[in-house]
Image (cartoon, rainbow, N blue to C red; front, side, top):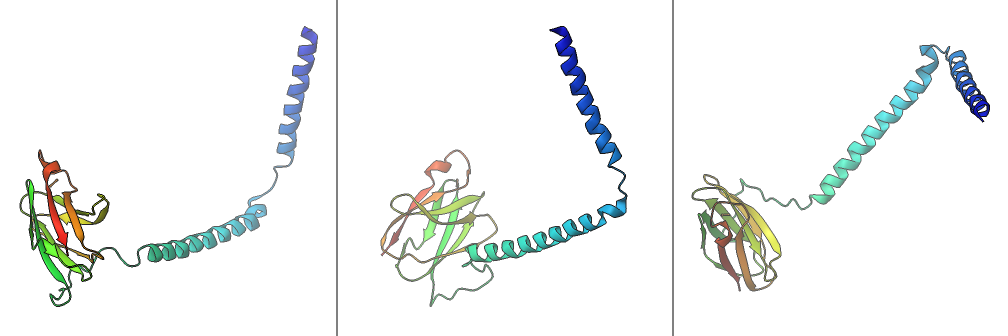
Length: 174
Ligand code: CUA
């Protein structure tokens, strides 16, 4: 039994040595032998990079069109837009006016009096339909067109202190 194990072990070692010997004998290639392979795969890598670049650009444009954030520097005319001034406070909203019409775009001018808040507009089922940050010292413009009348909830989307969860108000769309 022991001699059988010895025999198997010796044969195994012999096989491993044979493989090593084969590799050593056949590893006399010089760097020049690899140049064609290297060049080929560098070419593949360059083409793959360009492909990914083009694909990424197309996907980016397709998925960000229309761009979800309106032009922040544009003056939105009050002839075309209903303008609503929004201010976040610890812990309530002021919103003037609190009633808008459906079918015509609304420009929310969102700011904050103290700390950062999150202005989130939710429909009757509490599905978030539009949002922007309410930041002290900045006015963020949020454009949204309501397609039907209803009562919408404004909730704070940014933790802003003890009573963050009660920062709720209502927007009426006629
Ligand atoms: Cu305001 Cu949270």
